[in-house]
Amino acid sequence: MNKSKTRKSAVKRYKRTANKNFIRKKAFKGHLLQKKSSSRKRRLCSSITVGNTERLTVKKFFNN
Image (cartoon, rainbow, N blue to C red; front, side, top):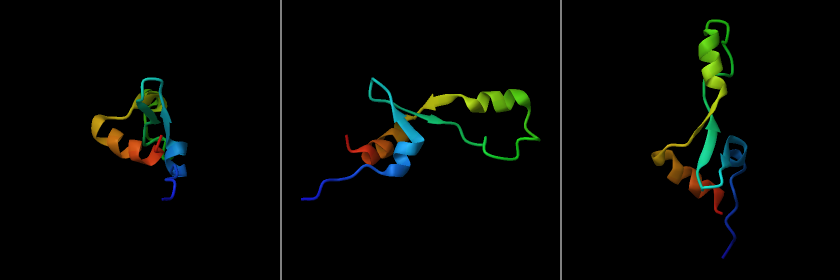
């Protein structure tokens, strides 16, 4: 049986923490930044942990 490989797109988007959670960047920071307030842009810079529903999907991508 073939070895299942890690999805490279997931490696670029998510990082695994020490206690088996995943962190990701927030969306809406890529473009159209002129109309967004500076406080909103500052909030979007931080990273957050992946929620429970998304965690199962991301875990399948990593295969470790």
